[in-house]
Image 1 (cartoon, rainbow, N blue to C red):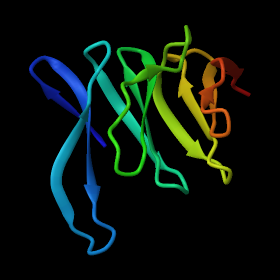
Image 2 (image 1 turned 90 degrees about the horizontal axis):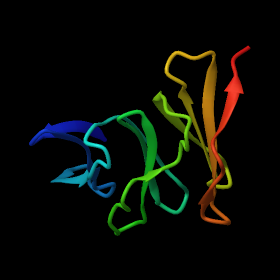
Image 3 (image 1 turned 180 degrees about the horizontal axis):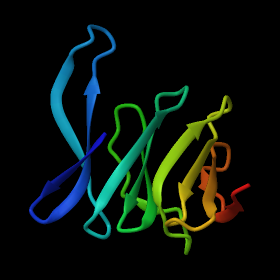
Length: 130
């Protein structure tokens, strides 16, 4: 996943590798921005092959998901009012996700958790740095 500026908007694009023979299929798939400025993508793939891309979109932290063989969902804001930068996503053994981001140089981090069993994100919360 990478940021691509085209026509004044910066979107995220992805490419897929064929795990059978290790070749790239040559196609790119865009994830269209909400606010015209997506950057800093972070990507994970769970045990069932569902991809989750986290990115910064003009300060908001957004998520887009793609099931195996499917299309990317429209990006959804997961940061609530806790805008920030430099999001990272981690995958847990049960395919739940944790996302952390810097609250724009503040002394805190933003955090939210995706629950695979309920297919939902928690309300974003601030975590103090120690």
